[in-house]
Image 1 (cartoon, rainbow, N blue to C red):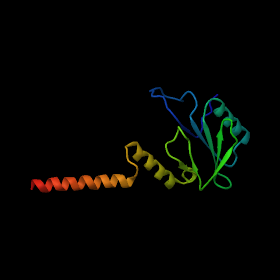
Image 2 (cartoon, rainbow, N blue to C red):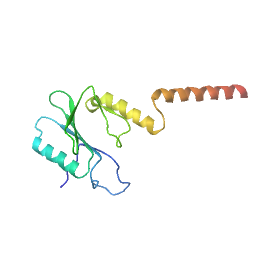
Image 3 (cartoon, rainbow, N blue to C red):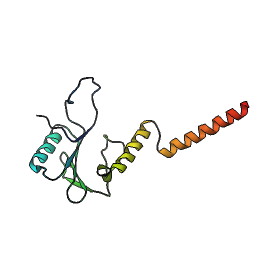
Length: 145
């Protein structure tokens, strides 16, 4: 049976094969809205955890903004909109709950992660490097004139 989460995070095999990835993600994110079949959702969470998913986050789109956090062998936890979610060993940085609801917050998180992948801690660090390189180039050019 195929049970694909809305978002799957984890090691993806380096394969040219098209189609679904076999196995389970380390982190699964489900968005639950009006009309969600709760029994089916709970079955899906239980199956993911049973087969090796470490964390399942359920983002609730009705009522107060919140994320339910499921981990095998632990009671369900709730993260509020002002909280941050962590996934040790899966995600390098915490994710603000707000990023799962608001596009601009999500974009900021994506930018931070892209910068870190290139070795920068922040956009300010990129700007500083650019200024430094610009000044060094200016000095070199001035010496040649």
